[in-house]
Image (cartoon, rainbow, N blue to C red; front, side):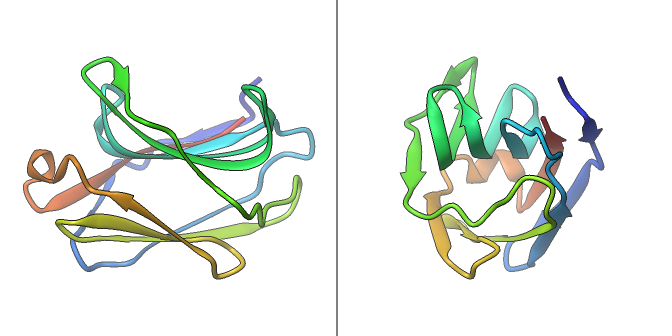
Length: 129
C-alpha cells in the first residue's frame, strides 16, 4: 500500500543541486523518486528496495521511455533504513545524472533523455511505498 505520494512538479536546471528528503514507513518495501516529463517519460527512476521485486536492500536506477524500461543499474551499498530520515541529492548535466546517497556514496547514470528536457529536468513524482 502507498502511504504517501508527493507530486511537486518541481523543475531544476543543469548544474543545480536538488535535495530530496523523506522517511520510508516502518513497513516500507521500496520507494521511488522519478525525474522526467511525465509518468511515460522518465529520464531517471531511483528505486531503493528494502524487499521488493525479488531484491533485498538494493538501489536500482533506470529510465522509462515510450512504455519501455531501460537497462537496470544496481549499486552496491544500501544506506537506507525503514522509519529513518534520508537525504538524496541529484545534479545533472548533458552527460549524466549524479546521485549522492545518504552515506555520501555516488551513483552516475547516463542522461539519455537530455533533449526532452530543453535544459530543465522535472521532478515528476516522489513515492514512498
